[in-house]
Image (cartoon, rainbow, N blue to C red; front, side, top):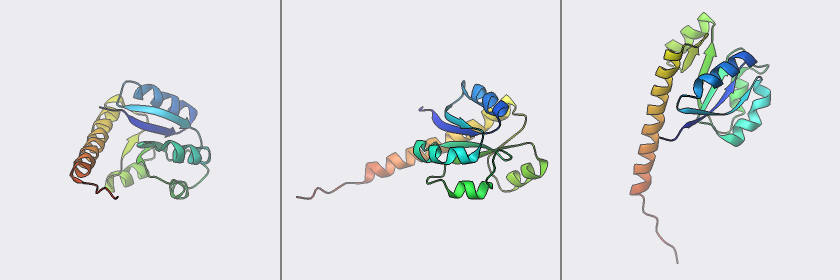
Length: 136
């Protein structure tokens, strides 16, 4: 299976920690940033599958930041704030509580890899059924 492409936006310590943890997983970290404002243009060019976003990591409000992305990757919020965790759970959003535990990361990645694999399989099936007509 092809690795998912991920981008991390988090403080320096968390960014380094998560990058190291992902080296043995199904995600290739293609870039990492400490600030949301520095990441927008790069994310739009790189088009990652996953975006690991520390909720306290930027000067821009998260909604404003996400609105600037041309393609929405699957978001994984990183937080230690209990109110945020409850909101993410209630809305069935992807998240990792801080500090990140390896088992929690493995479970999340297994879930996300399965979802992306199912989407890829469905896309292949749809494309296989299409017959393009040739125009003279």
